[in-house]
Length: 182
Image (cartoon, rainbow, N blue to C red; front, top):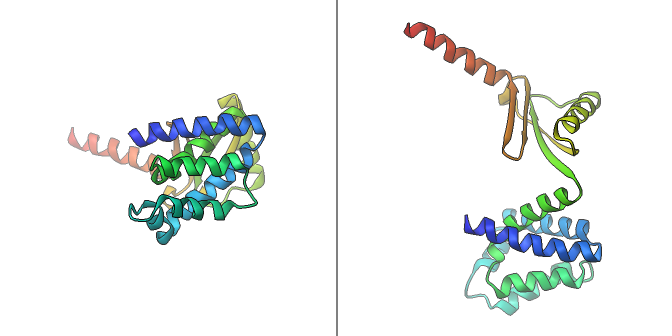
């Protein structure tokens, strides 16, 4: 829980800097790429989390990755994380920065799971309905999940709208079991 709070503080501070210099989208993509590398590359994660690796070496590694690509404010931010020994919360910072950047643009990210890919017409119709419901611009992340067995599972923030066949079958089964008990 403390890591999430720290990640939010670091992300908010970085967003303030990137908004001022106009590099928010670039920084967002760099942070998400770092998050992916941290999650998928065990050696990279080990070097950053290993206390025996000197901080200067960790800084050089991170700086070299973004040399000539990122603004100095971003590499300075990464140096600060290493100085404060907070490089292990990079994935949380990336997620929080992504959310905060979207919120500052008035965009809500919504995940939609379906059992088969949505057509462009279905996705467009769903997007317009969700935009009316949310009162904001919506970015849909569509995922395929055969376990839903039909229908849609819509998730945004802490809200879940479960219109899946799997959920409906579960509810029917529960009602049937209640009737059998009587």
